[in-house]
Image 1 (cartoon, rainbow, N blue to C red):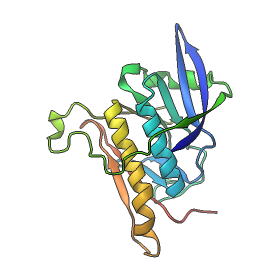
Image 2 (image 1 turned 30 degrees about the vertical axis):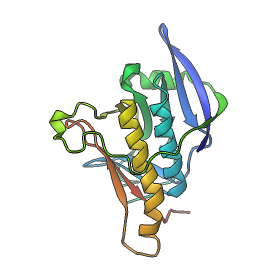
Image 3 (image 1 turned 180 degrees about the vertical axis):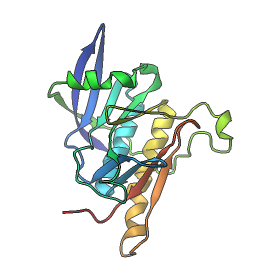
Length: 208
């Protein structure tokens, strides 16, 4: 798949960080700080693009991948009720502190365009730790919320598997939901047992 992005750089102290954003940002995608999970709703195009961004994060351990969603139109059961969030994906080896995101975000310029070609994410990728108890699995996302942004920090493996969850949402969701009032299709990205996890749902009907 081909991704159109913008690449931004900024310094914090002695370190320079690279932030990658989609160009343009998908309009039919919402992420909120829900009561039990962090919840997201995506149409087919947005889910497909987001799958590519997760795959890009898996191959870019020195970059933060930023999906700015807070300004999108409300959609889904909780949107408009719960706090809207952006999304940042990053490899744990980058060792970036989410508490410094607001400072870094404020220093980013307009960026430069970059087109990336990636393998299509595997919708059938098995979740990290399949067949094992959660407390035995160290290869899981850590989840943080800072400055109206959800941070998903993990390994290349977990990022690829997260890409698979979104790819499956784009592939399967439309066929399940179309023409069936009240039916829905959702997936979950599991996190460290101390965190809540990410619940994502395919949404067919969006406000005008």
